[in-house]
Image (cartoon, rainbow, N blue to C red; front, side, top):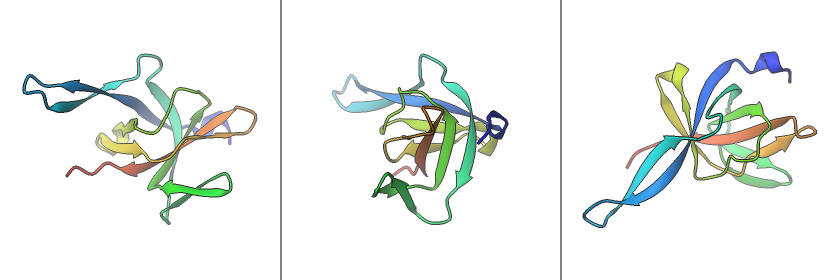
Length: 113
């Protein structure tokens, strides 16, 4: 992969659970404080399996590949503005590719209940 392959802008968000005045938990999503907007290569997955090392980690609709960083975890989500701001939930622990060059983020389309 080359830096030129990172042709889709994405925004990484984290969830800060808060309590409403009623005492009920509420999810509040916000952009990461540092470098939330990044360029990515996006691969649509034809199957539903994502391999992380020797184990089947999770289902993945897409895999976002970005420049390596260490602050992306499951429980976060990705907003992909070129798709009309569709959200994808990080579905498994991201995987380092190369010598800490790239990070693959498996994600599933966010579905509301």
